[in-house]
Length: 118
Image (cartoon, rainbow, N blue to C red; front, side, top):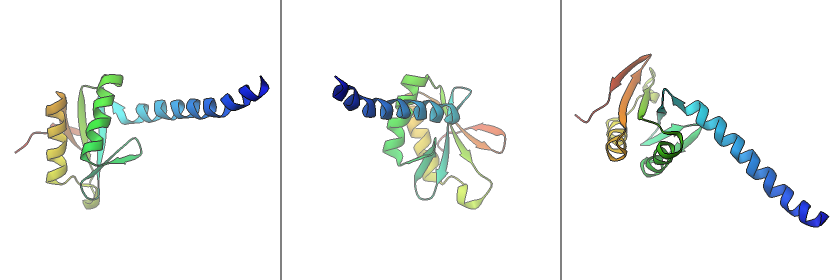
């Protein structure tokens, strides 16, 4: 009996730690029912401390829509040149938003502007 408890204790602790981390990540990446996504070098994105390509981001945003009931995506555009979204990154966010029927915005400073393909 004690051996069974020892066997289950370690996976249970890992599962609980993962659940706690997932809750903490979700809290920091969602504001006003919108996922906050940052552009990073290349055609990648960062959300909740994780870096994703377009396909992975699509899956993650889809999961957030189902689990967290998000209604939109905000592409956070930084003031520095290395943190500015490329045209391809903007297009990717618009494409993901259209497919998942989510609003898309770009944030410069404190201002939100609707993000659409041009």
